[in-house]
Image 1: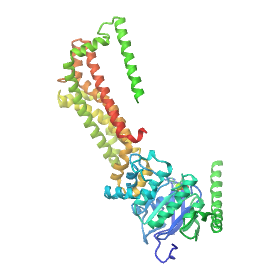
Image 2: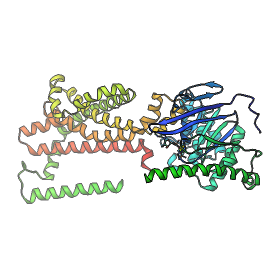
Image 3: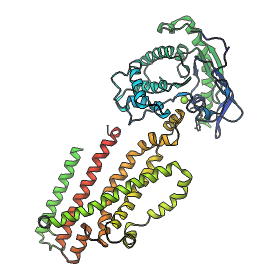
Image 4: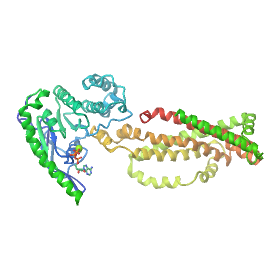
Length: 272
Length: 247
Ligand SMILES: Nc1ncnc2c1ncn2[C@@H]1O[C@H](COP(=O)(O)OP(=O)(O)OP(=O)(O)O)[C@@H](O)[C@H]1O
Ligand SMILES: [Mg+2]
């Protein structure tokens, strides 16, 4: 499962990307690259521009002029990525008038796929996502964890080379969360997608990722990139191993420094 | 819901009893306020004419209502897809909408004649504007993040309109359609009073001319029964269609 050293061109490459909203610079001079099949996790203090980064890679927001954005080796504008990456936003955004299956096939329907076929495919995927028997339920009838799995299923069914997951487990309790992490690794290993994954949780970032990117306080850029050389498949006990703990200490230090900066900055702003 | 209906029915019954008692106790002349029993009796003896008139008015109101809803929602969809056109058209729309029904009804009679067409047009205008404005407000209520998600799936404006904005707007559209039920009957009746070959408004007008106040009241009774039934029916359909809001 180890990755081939950068022989092929990376799937996604950003160089010197910035994004300004009015007077707020959310992202400054951000560079990163993601190899095909890689699972990259992104951690960073709140408000450092992680979601902004995703919005640009999903094609929803155009970065400030000057940076370079390459997808599959070709330079492109952000909007050209619309419909080409599989994006899961921070909130599940399920449509309340659609049941589980119809929410899951939303992207396929938009693509113009045959609805009956898409439904059949979604029905076959239900057990894998722990949703057996819930196909006819509506979002308001589901628990938070289930809603999140429906949103994940929607993202998986939209079969694109790159998946962007923005804190998919952020709202879940600790137990459900570890179960979902193991489950996601399992699904990822079987479907072989490239994943860029935002989280607040350092354990989660290390447990899941081939690489962990630590972002700086706002304006965000990649401050520290750390390869995670832990063997796969990863078992739950891994979290208590010395290698894991050492990695965690290193990454926590980097984050804490940045969190302090943004904390002081925001407190300063409040005091001023 | 059931308790609400029960309480409503109780309220109406109390009012009717009070009315009956007042009219009899004070021995009011029927041109001031006839008693409820008098009205019911008159309505029963003239039921043939009342039913024909009610059917006539209902047909006008329903036709105008249907046209108004379709055109109102249609224009709202169109304008929400074309923001520049919308900015140009809205002031004109608001200007037309600010003219009261009573003012354009005579014009419609002059243009379309005394038959059903003028009533249908008046109702369609009144209903159309109400539904149009509520639909437009509903279509604007879209969740930007949900729209962004759909764009990331490659959805165009039409697809987002159909799959997200229209369903999001449905509760407001339905509310507009519900208040329009009562309005459609009022406008049909008022326009009939200005000139018609039949209908409840025409009966009321005739009865006023003949100073037959009991007949006026029995026509009003039938009209409000019709309004209530129409309002209730649309309310029931609304709760069925917009199921995701009620639980
Ligand atoms: N559309 C926008 N308009 C104006 N400012 C914005 C917009 N989007 C993001 N920002 C600002 O950019 C900064 C970064 O926001 P972003 O949502 O990317 O942070 P984040 O790292 O995802 O935070 P969190 O971890 O809390 O989700 C914030 O200060 C935010 O206020
Ligand atoms: Mg975010």
